[in-house]
Length: 129
Image (cartoon, rainbow, N blue to C red; front, side):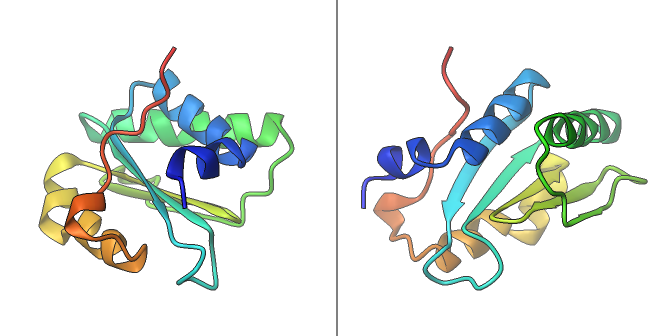
């Protein structure tokens, strides 16, 4: 399966990646977990530089989702901004502080869920201008 084609085939995912980039989210990773997950197709993991940055990223994504009439099923962690979770149905977004992302080894977990080998581990997936 070609990851680039898969990303291009999902306009919601492309929009989310653009919205994250608009607020300077860092170290963006996309995990295609559709084959191994019953609750979503893609998990996006990124980080901000501080709790306020994470809140700004999350609020921007929520505002843009509303503007584009996307259903937000759930959101959590906005009050603290350490780890924010946004569930937009087939795209789930995790926004971390870098130290929490590392502490929980979240990329290792989602790499396993996506069935990636060490050679296939994701790289930064921010959209290019």
